[in-house]
Image (cartoon, rainbow, N blue to C red; front, side, top):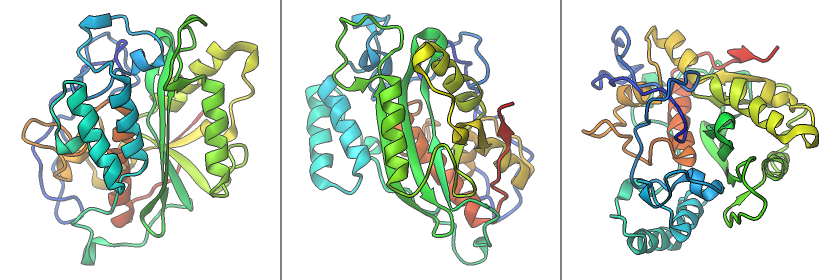
Length: 318
């Protein structure tokens, strides 16, 4: 998530045996996203990430912001994420990073999400997921600080264990003045409409998900607090919260239940999958950039599918 009062994450564990290959240790000291806690501590921000609040209409740090305010860099980052196999998009992103005064690091290049390398032979088991598709969601921004700023979704097919499609939109802050232009962000209700159309292209209905699909989050905050909070900001213009958003799979709970561990966030699982670098950063992407986070959560989801973990609903709204 973006700045605005999230809890500081705790120290990550050292990578252990790849889960499914051997016994998992007794939990991590994990750096969870802890989206449900709001003590006001700073986030571990990645300097290669664009500023979501600037793109959404207002960054309170202005020119002192440590994140990029370059629109063309943000545009190129999104385009390359939406088409990770497009070589031209990769070249454009490298060029725009340089124009924005940022060092180019290959980790900002999105890659197709595939099963982990350890997912061979005995690691494969029959999936215990009752859904045909899983929609990995990671919202950025916070309603109490003006609104959601980014809305990315990575769609995975469970039986084939593959990614199917990508959706991402920056969201205009609900509280920003009408005169403020946001070239890369649109209003929340427009984003919701676009998401609905995106899912319908794959035969999925936000209002009638059944066992066709479920949302997956890293924690309960996204759908328990953030999305309902954003709907409140919309006021009378907002319709009833679609049924598909009223239940979800918390990937942390699924991981801990299967491995008997105590990870507290995405990086706890990534560490066990050996997907963190020596500095404790994800090897792929910028942590707290929503579109990169859904990729990494997606890698965790595919691993859990590989080892036959139970991936069913863990939480519901009343």
